[in-house]
Amino acid sequence: MKFDENELARIAELVASKNKSPMGELNRQQICTALSVSESTIRRLEQQGMPYTPVGARSKRYDLAECKKWLKENQLCPSGTTKTAANTSGSWSPGKEFTEYCRKAQLRVMPS
Image 1 (spheres, rainbow, N blue to C red):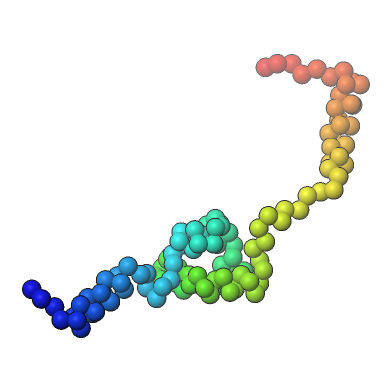
Image 2 (tube, rainbow, N blue to C red):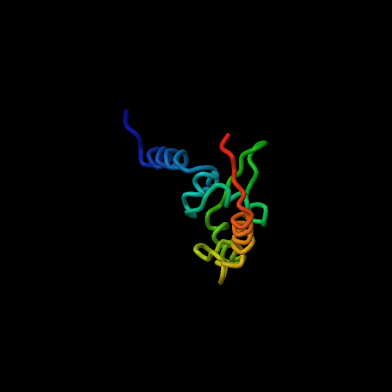
């Protein structure tokens, strides 16, 4: 069976379109991989307004370019910027006081 050039081009187009997701959009696992974030981060970003397209009752699709643009505009995903307390010794003082009180009172705990 021989095909002419037009038919071969049409077949190639069909094969290429089957390998792509609808409209070039990604599911949640694919967008997580593309952005290198967890699924819980994607859910949080959705609540903050990250664009997605609902598909069916529970599925969603994400346009990678649109999501990256939204993230740049909103700057909601600062990776590696964890806030640390300057001095955490203040949080230990109540526990330390209780320990000292127990030592002074010579309280003993009986093993059960």
